[in-house]
Image (tube, rainbow, N blue to C red; front, side):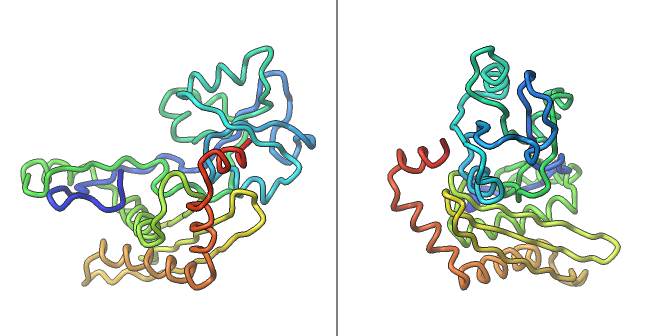
Length: 247
């Protein structure tokens, strides 16, 4: 879903978020349980520049190779006898929703997930009040506030699914506090910009506006620290070069 919607459309609801973390899926021939256990040169398959950038920064001894196809196709490529992959990185949410949670070897806490990962948004016509009332019953407050903050960060940084922006926003209901951390990493893993901030939500003010303001604040911090230089360098890089950085 684009971060800026057409004028006649609105985000009516965001349902409760599934586990938004990334997952390590090990090839059946291996007994390793974590990325840390994998030997130098192990080949990790992923089609995400964000995942490659953060993982290359954390695990420079590993090798990353691009992989395409739907989830079942990717798992088949991993499980093949002649597979070049030792493991894959996939979304926990996707594995869980397709009943494949048993294949998850490790839930990765060290990598910041993609904006909105694990959440489902319901987009409707702005003038459709009947559907808006129905959709509102599906809205999950904590997920909505977190995702609005994450989406605003990406909108301000002018990012998308093909750039290495990681963002995690979390709502603490007992403290009425929304916390956010974000990272932008160059595809080679050598340069990174990080920022974090939080707000206490004022119940007398519009919550959505406050959540977006937090995303804007964190994005501004990242801009000041040089995030745009990394993103612009990726924009200037031909697609083939960016893909090769994922291999």
